[in-house]
Amino acid sequence: MKKVGIVMGSASDLPVIEKAVETLKSLDIPYEVHVYSAHRTANAAAEFSELARKNGFGAIIAAAGMAAHLAGAIAARTTLPVIGIPCKGGAMDGLDALLSTVQMPSGIPVATVALNGGVNAALLAAEIIAVGDEKLAAKLDELRKAGEEKTLRSDAEVSAKFNI
Image 1 (cartoon, one colour):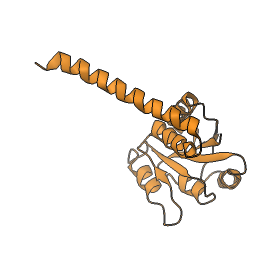
Image 2 (tube, helix red, strand yellow):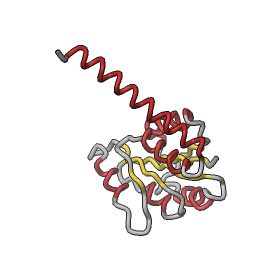
Image 3 (cartoon, one colour):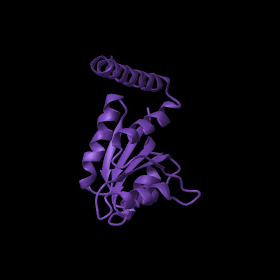
Image 4 (cartoon, one colour):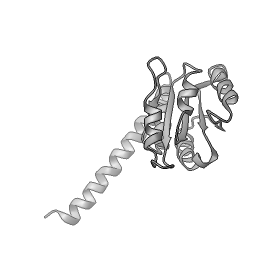
């Protein structure tokens, strides 16, 4: 199975990344986590990106706040799918990170999830890898079914309490 690379611009993004890690663990997807800044460690980020396919990765998750150039910098150096997580913080409370992550130039795509969307980033990476892995696809189907069942149980509880 392909691994998921997870990079964050600084260790302050770790609470968001931990949610992605927990999700990947629950699906038995191998991963590696690194702190690479698009600005402070540009060479290390570039090397990681350029070698990612050779090193067995199938997708990369990149989380960063404020200027949030990390996902774009990673995507510029690989043709693997890159999923950007804009992180809250700074003067604009994440809006700047969202706009920086989603506004990639033509030819350098970055999929973007919600602010602090670690779970959805991991699920999207899993769906990408599952294109060639039926066992993983079945796990994702089970996870969706469990979410549906949980929501239907909540509906029954709320309906029983409030509906006449």
